[in-house]
Length: 230
Image 1 (cartoon, rainbow, N blue to C red):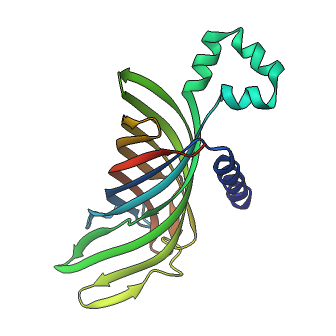
Image 2 (cartoon, helix red, strand yellow; image 1 turned 180 degrees about the horizontal axis):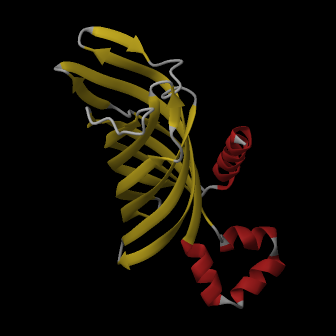
């Protein structure tokens, strides 16, 4: 099942990149919260949220691209031209795929002993959204997302001792997240937009180990540029 989802994400990523009209680059900061449930079913309360960097590159394509449709199929283009309302609605829906690098960190203490979790994840994202005009050059873009994250590097610091998180089932391996993003976009010129975004991502299922089950929630605020590529 996990392999099928991974292959589907890869297929959507490649196909979206090939047909995309825009690419978004963003840089921001996220705030991550760990939720750890021990084997007795009790939530561990010694962990607190921490911040980290968040970078993302996303390819975006409208659900209906009338210009490309005219080049591929004049018959289909004519059908949609006779249904202007439907064409307008479909052209406002988007699908997207991209790559991200996220630092999903946490801090805490046990009996006055400091704990620090530092992680770097690389992820593939796919999503669907809708683009709504607001006022003149301003638009708002909302989308739902599915994310597959893979640990690049992770380290737990307990007092002055460091432990690698590589091989730890709570952190290592592919972790699937669901999420959403809201972006406010302002047009600079015909090919460039500036945007600010808020996103939220959370674990779809807990990561299990001998010490308990771990899930993560991450919120991020980012600023970026959207560039026309087709």
